[in-house]
Structures are given as C-alpha cells and as structure tokens.
Length: 398
Image (cartoon, rainbow, N blue to C red):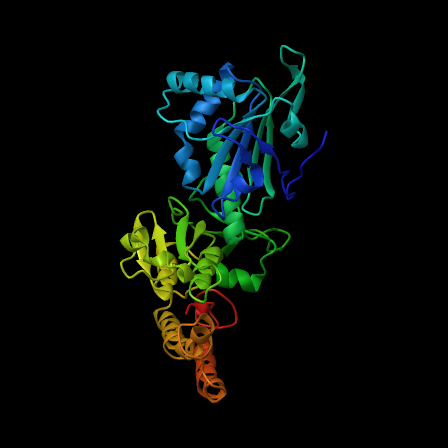
C-alpha cells in the first residue's frame, strides 16, 4: 500500500462529495494560504463516527479561526452521506453542517493515501478506511498523519493543539515541548543560530545543562495574535506595484489572504459593487473581517500593527519605525511619480508618450538624488525589511 511521508506533497484526486465534486489540490488552495484537515472514517451510520463528525461540526469555527478547512471521507456514496448528515445534526445537536464528506466507494483515495484498514470489512467483504487524520499545509505538503483504530474516537482538541504547534513552527521558528498548550512557552528551533535567536527572540533564555551545551532555549510564545477570523482579501492586480507589496507583507507575516483580481483596464473598479466597498474606487483595497481600507502603505502598516509579525518586518522602536515611515513616504512621493510619468502611463495609454530626453532626465534624477537618499534612509532604519529596498514587502510599497 502506498505511504505518504511527512513533507510529501499529498496526492491529488477528483471525487464527489456531499457538497458537490472537488479537485483536491484546487480545493485546498482556495483561498490561498489555507491549511486543511482531512479525516476519514470507516462507514456512514456508525456510532463512533457519528460523534466525531458531530464534534467537528460543533467546533468548525476553531479550525476556521486557524485558516484551516476540514473535509471528511468514507467509502459510502453521496446519497448515504447526505442522509447520515441529518442523523448527525439531530443526535449531536448540530445546527449547521458546513463541511463536505468525500465519497470513495472504489477505495481509490483510501489506497492512494494509505488509509485502508485490512482488518475492517464491510458487508461485501471490502476493506474499510481506518480513522486517519491528515493535516496539510498551504504548500500542499503533509504536516501530520495520525491513525486510530476503528473502536477509538479521535480527540479533536488534541488535533487543534497540534495545528497550533504546526503553525507556530512554520510562521515563527519555534517548537512546542511536551504537554504544551496554546499560550505557554515554546522552544527555539535548533536551526536558529544564536545571533538570529537574540534578534528574533529577545526574551528567550538558555536552560543550563550538565553537558554545557546551549540547546535548551525557551522563549515566550510568539503569539499569532488571534489570526484573522477569515483570510484577508486584497482586491487589486496581483503583480501591480501597489498590490504586490501588500500581498508580500501578508505572506511575510504568515497571515491567510486571498487576492481578488480587479481589472482596472476593463473598468472593474468602477462597478457599483466595488464602489460600494471603496467609494474612492482605487486599488488595492483590503477587507479584514468587515473592516475595509485602501492605500497600500497604510494597509501594510495596518497588518503589522494588528497582528504579531516578525520583528524585522516593522521595528517596534519608535525612532526606527519613524524612519521606516519616512522611507515609505519618500519612496511614494518622489520615485513612483517619476516612474509612472515616463514609463507606466505611456505604456497603458493614459498619457502621451514621453520623449527620450525626459526619460533620460528621470533616470539621472533617480541615480543622482533619489537612490542615494533612499540608501541613507535604509541605513538609518537599521536594515529592517520595511525601511529598505533590499527585499519585499513594505520597502516596496508604492
């Protein structure tokens, strides 16, 4: 039987579900940055499975708050799933059942994922699926695999705990010790150097050992600050000079997001529904659980101020942060208008073509005045991501 190892890209498949057909890799990637919890059960209309699926329906918001989608699987057909859901809702006191159940009557998914239990057979003598749990990261790679016997119901509080740990490791370079719970101290990963640990985890402490080796490094949990209740939506053109850095900021912060394409060339920003959201009808525009704003620099700063982000993204020191703000404002107020005047507007037909003399003048102005000034600001800002032009994201917010 095939085996999926931790770190492998999970197998793709197409299947019918209680909510319609799915192409798995597409489903787990929508919206971008999503995590996924896939859990299988032996059969519909069975007692332990009924309590499990009811529990997941009741705590689905816990998964949603962690940007994690849930999807179940059994070898019964969709009609069976839909009838069984009514029993689950009635007996487990579930008001809404909002996640899909995959139908796998030919055991194709079960075999590909290694979740067949050879000791459990249905009435036709076919092997049934075991109680498997798979957590898949935004990179489509397997982060966790658990197998339970058919007689033992799963502890979903533990699965939530593991999900918290996995996300802390991915986004903040920490590990979690035995019996750790959300909010408790974490361990700095061995892969983090002493110099980087001092910068990234200024409050970490080294536990003395008889061996004298400094491998036990304890740090307060780098709190994810609640994570957005839903993926942050960025309305704009993905590769535009203003939308890209906002998206890069969200990616750098490890926050879930979704890019909604707004084609301004076709007037999508002038449609009534967009203007109702943003009366200024400009892009990018950002939505965060009912809160809407626009202007790229303000959006990037909002992300850093609202959520726990890497310390090198936007300094906490007031003076350094002010220098970063100065860099952003200087960048926007000088360089970008010149670039748009001589490059962007003529290309898209918003302005008459600029002659070579004006283009050369702009290039010389950039080399002689703007770039040296920006280098000075970058140096003053202490090499932060926001204040410099060496990498995205906030440094490139235009």
